[in-house]
Amino acid sequence: MKFSLRPQEGAFYEMFSRAAQNLVRGTELLSELALPGADVQSVSERLAEVEHDSDKITHELYNKINSTFITPFDREDIYRLGSGLDDVMDHLEAVGNLVYLYGLTKLPALPREMIEMIDVLDQQAKVTALAMPRLKQMKGLKDYWVECNRLENDGDRTYRMLLVRLFSGEYDALTVLKMKEVADELEAACDAFEHVANTVETIAVKES
Image (cartoon, rainbow, N blue to C red; front, side, top):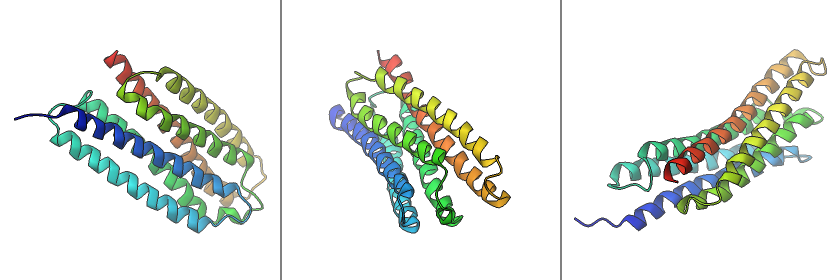
């Protein structure tokens, strides 16, 4: 039996890139929540569509691992990277869903710190999407994981400032509970991006 390694390798990298591009789409949709008169229901529905597509990519990836004799790098790391990308998308979708279900855009404006966290996520998504194609050559990746970790630190600081604002007495107790849940999902998304970057670093070190 003959095995064609290059097409199989190409398929893995292509799936990673597609999953990362969905994260960019996801953060761009969340960014719409900062716009005046944002259609929150539409944002939530479109995020659900992107999340569904990401689930399909993850299933494709798992099926490819199970049907491929030789993988470009460790199967466990391929699973970790695919699962990590999918986890980020789940958190992004949860943010949009909660903002819609809780009716938070009925407030005069979302907290500035919440918008800043979405901006951090958008930057993380973009650097992740740029990094995925580089996996094929295992070059130019260090700048990616360093930057992604730096952005995660920015997100942590902004999250703490958001908590300070939420518990300052500016909002009623029920609104605080709702926004705290959204804030936790935003913070979890930042952490999930960092986990993806750490997985890429692990892969790069093993393959160097």
